[in-house]
Image (cartoon, rainbow, N blue to C red; front, side):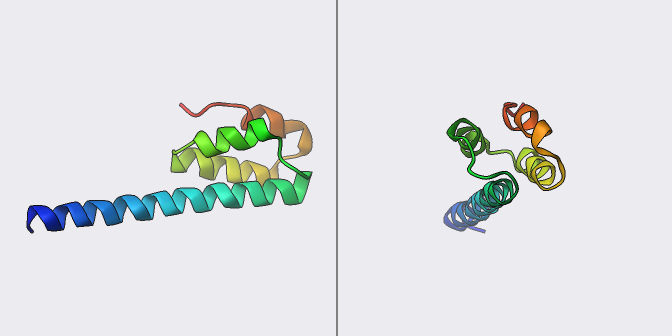
Length: 80
């Protein structure tokens, strides 16, 4: 594989990863808002600033399964 092909492959991989990450983040916002109403801007900012797929997936699971009383604690947490 040439250096140019390697760069293209790297760009494709990074684009796919970013797309997956943003899709999870969008799903997180959608699930949260469907269950709890409009999302506070500070929580949305934390989600938008998070680029760790595992963290986003964990938050998505919590948004879909936890109650309103628990939502602030996990959503306000910054990723490691």
